[in-house]
Length: 383
Image 1: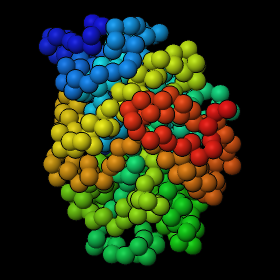
Image 2: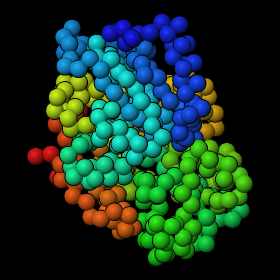
Image 3: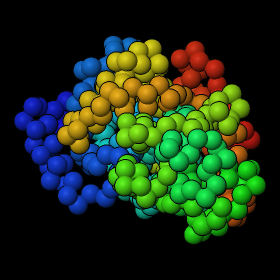
Image 4: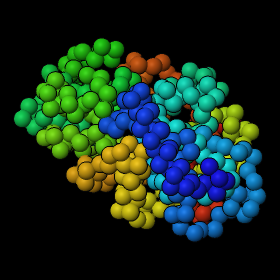
């Protein structure tokens, strides 16, 4: 890819053909299956609004790295990544530094790539970020920004479940043992006074760990009675006859909780803070762009999904899903701490030491320069 981030039509066609060949061996992704190009979304940089940037790259200078590897999932709770890369808003801030996007199936594989040195920056949920930080004894990653809140719902078969109390004795799916939604559901069950073994999922409610990709089929076949899942899986289930029984945002103060963070390898952060700052400048501008024109942003996210997977989301799925997600620069640090406490109560993890998991120095610098309020690390910042 040229340093400007642009590609030719022939390059884009060849890249997408390569991607589609790779789908046969790619692991399952939430609702959608796809792998992203090694030289992807920066090609759309000409779409970005022409705003003055404060980065060295935008003013003609070079950043300290020729390439930055960015990981994320192709689902709507990673809207900042989808739209920011699709519209060239992140690439514009990086100038000649090339973006190498990488798609991941789930948090553990992204953390493994970050810890193994094959990934520099990633968009990821709170539970894998916590697990990755704890397992490396605080040595391998930092949360450097928020990205999204919300976008998680409990949807059920309305013929079998009409009230929350009706969940007792039913089979409810979550995406993965110990993942963010699994922890949230186990915590909710405990608050009801019901008992469930967190390892097996057996108890007063049967927690069925099911990949989001196959959850709709499991629901249609009657092997599950509902699911506590992120978007767009929740809205997909609604189109298959499910009903929304609970929106997780209603369980949180101010109706906000972190669902996606931006994390970075500590090694990369130390070596290339200018690149991390440029990426964060891009994510802040992306979130501003999304919030200013959500309809256009929704179409952009859907176009990104279609370009890379060959399939866009139906309006009946993406419209309600998009409305339930809030993009935000604030990492909502107090809610991450609460989610860690929930995992401890569920006996999925021991009490973690999260001191130092955040480094919001560069984010707050970017926010201040943009005339936006700084955000808090809830006392969990790097010293």
